[in-house]
Length: 133
Image (cartoon, rainbow, N blue to C red; front, side, top):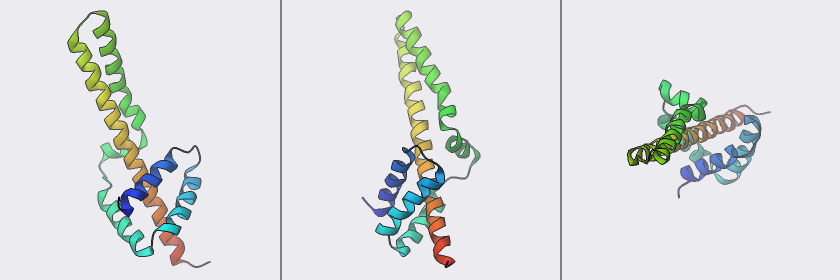
């Protein structure tokens, strides 16, 4: 596993903590500062900038990933309800497809959120090294 993947995993770990974005960034700054050289930080930042999508749909998924996935959870639930109550195997397939789409959307949003947090952290580290106190 390379530095890039490791930093993404660290950002995902910080997302699981209930705290403000500023606190998450501060915790990530400490971890990144200890384990990644300045040159590697710059390379990872360039990779993130190139990799993060800027289209409006991705922005909506980053901001509201649970809201976007909610209709698919509903489809999965209705498919399960109708599949069990009416013994329709096709409805059970809809359950699997709806659930898989909801999970895929939430995972995609989670990854994008972690990348956004990591990019924000790397930008703040770079900014703090440019201007001495």
